[in-house]
Image 1 (spheres, rainbow, N blue to C red):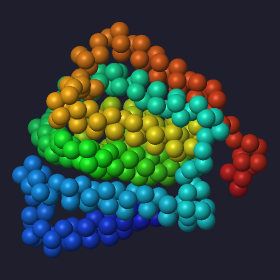
Image 2 (image 1 turned 180 degrees about the vertical axis):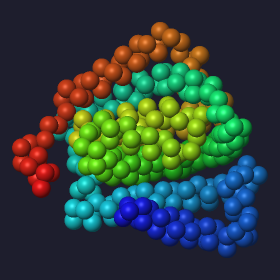
Image 3 (image 1 turned 90 degrees about the vertical axis):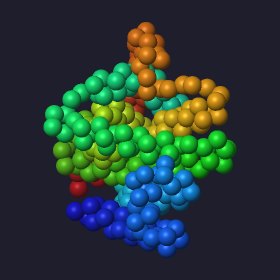
Image 4 (image 1 turned 30 degrees about the vertical axis):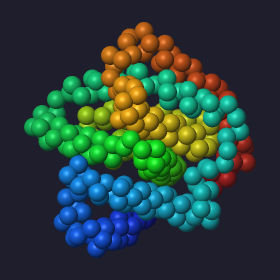
Length: 294
C-alpha cells in the first residue's frame, strides 16, 4: 500500500502540475489533453508532451522507488541494489542477450498480434493503433537534437525509471512475498507488461521483462537491466531515425527480416549469454543470508 500511495502521489504531483503548466502556456487543458491523445494533430506540442512524459516517469517511478528504498533501508537505493556487478563481463553479456533476443521476440510478436481477444478484440486493436500513432509522432524527427531528446525520454529515462521501479522494487517485494525468485521474476514481468497496456505486444514485453528480471537476479546489480533496457529502446529510436532520414529501412519487429535460421542461432547466443551470467552469478554470503532472515 505504501508503494501504491507513493506512485499515486508522484503521478498527481508531477503529471498534474505538468498538465496545469502546459495548459496555461498552450491554451487550456482540453487542448493539451487532445494533443496527448492525438499528437499528430498538434505537432507544436509534441516536444512539450514528451517533456511531460519524462517528468511523469521520474515522478511516478523513480522518485517513489527511491523513497520506498529509503523508508525500508535508510538508503535511497539500498533496496534497489545499485552497486556494480562483481563480474565485469556482465555488461557485455546483458547487451548480447537483449540484442540476440530480438529475432525470437519478433516471432512472438507476430504470433501475439494474430491472437483474437473475443468481444474486446476491436477495442484492443483500436487502442494499439492509437498507441502506434502516438509512438510514431513521438519518434518523428530528422534532426540530431531531436534524436538526442528521444534517446533521453524514450530510452534512457524509461530504462532507469522502469528498472528501478519494476525490478528494483516490485520484483524484490514479490520475492519477499512468494519466497521464490522465479515466481517473482514472472509476476514482476507480467505486471511490467500489463502496465504498458498494449495487448498485441503483451507476450514479447513479458519475455523482455523476464529477461531483465533474471539479469537483475544473476548480476546482483540493477545496472545490467538498465543497460539492456536502454539498448533495446535506444535501438528502436535510432532505427526509426534512420528511416526518417532515408538512410535505412530496418524493422526488428518483422519476423520475416530474420528468418528461421538466424532466429535459431541468435536465440542460442542469447541463451548462452544468460547461462554465462548465471554461471558467474553473485551468490549471497552467509552473513547476507542471515541478515535477510531477521
